[in-house]
Image (cartoon, rainbow, N blue to C red; front, side):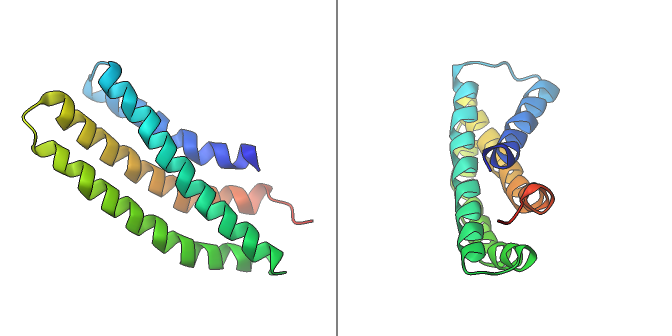
Length: 133
């Protein structure tokens, strides 16, 4: 399960590194902080998703049904949490200080990448690799 859960948490970090490289933003302490914050939030969403999935499986539901119930209930919570966090971090873009502007922009982008990863990559990995006992 750890290997399944780590893939959707690494994807947003790789996307952030790609954006940093494409735009030409230097990797400094201020931009490196973005990696740790976004990894923490991505792990939180993944744990939320996987714990609900495990609860549904423990109720005796089939793999596909448990994934559907998890997606509908936890997916909504993950989307709302991400939108609220992104709107808060996007306010940092109103700053004239360039470091604060980049932190707001890049954290919001990474949170969106983490949302996409948790809603699309994680269910596919669970369907493909998870074996019910």
